[in-house]
Image: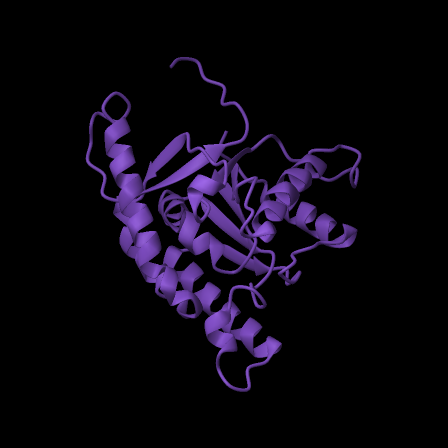
Amino acid sequence: MNTGTALVISAHSADFVWRCGGAIALHQQKGIDVTVVCLSYGERGESAKLWKQEGMTLDRVKTERRKEAESAAAALGVADIQFLDCGDYPLQLDRDEKFRLVDLIRKVQPGFILTHSKYDPYNTDHMYASELTLEARMIAQAWGHNPGEKVLGAPQVYLFEPHQTEQMAWKPDVFLDITPVWDRKWAAIQCMQGQEHLWHYYENVGENRGNHFRRNSGGQSGGRDCRYAEGFQSVFPRTVDEL
């Protein structure tokens, strides 16, 4: 059931742009308010271009990364973006920070959640964020956690596409046509000045997934055309009345 809200849990401040920017823009366009949570700014491990500038400091990197993420969120029409500033490389949350995320999940009451793949040997922050998301979802469902609050239902969790997909044990079972909002995603991508080297990589990913959408759309989408798409792997079974 879609509650009219959705939640993206992003390890670093740019991940939501590359991996599910199209889904964000598309659902915002459909009237579903998307909240984005950035667990860190990616200030230590994902900001090499900024650190190469003379006299750069940690606070300045955080400031620039936040500006980029806020501009990208605006381009995608994000309803709300929040920065937990938990640090990166490594990303680690203590108990209170985890409960802060649980509180946020309960407040949003998302119809679905988007986050990282379960496995990523190139970036353990990503798979930590995935594990954290499932843990926080579980706690948010517990009637004994802060009794009296509205508990979470059972939103689907979709794992968005990681970098170097073949190494991540990630297998998409959903392709989403983002062609109608590609211009918004591309505008958001270009906001991420600190990682310009990834711009065209993720443009190519969008085109490749568009091809996969077309190849699989014959019996499911009437064989319709699709230029850009995003892939997702669902965590939980989906209940249906017909196939």
